[in-house]
Image 1 (cartoon, one colour):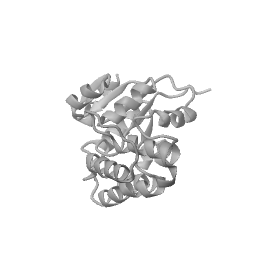
Image 2 (cartoon, rainbow, N blue to C red):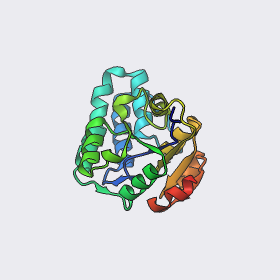
Image 3 (cartoon, rainbow, N blue to C red):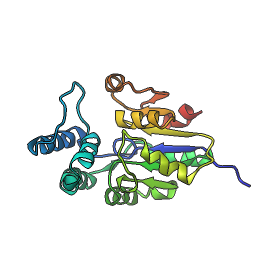
Image 4 (tube, helix red, strand yellow):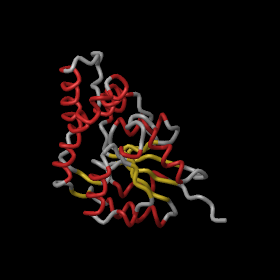
Length: 211
């Protein structure tokens, strides 16, 4: 019986592809949406992410789910048309496959955006699994996406997450797997209490970081 492979899980936006998707702007627009509708969203020092706000809506006002999801969907649809590959994304994915890793995407984007971008850049040939927000019960920073990954590889000896944002790091941390930060805002990771296993500024450095 062939042993299960180690698994490398990638975020999508600003990790394998780059687009003008501004997640801070998405979060601000979603925050305005909930406050205008009188939903309690406590003031705090750290900004609310769109995923966190959506979790509040899902819990406290599920009748607004479709309406509030239209906000990130609109941003994502505009951004996907202008997406470009991150430097060396294809080379990194090919190298990991040669090293015996299974590869997966775990993104807060929906399936339409993920499939469009991955097909556009012909990346699906390097990927074994794509997990989108349509596949999970909660978005990053919640670790639910790892439930899907582990369902595919229940015997995987190692799973590692690669991403650019604090939500990726917190999700990895909550799920008990290492986090490799790619061109991430170090100060933001520190503010959020993200534990980082390795930091890379080029995807070409990923095989060495995994080693």
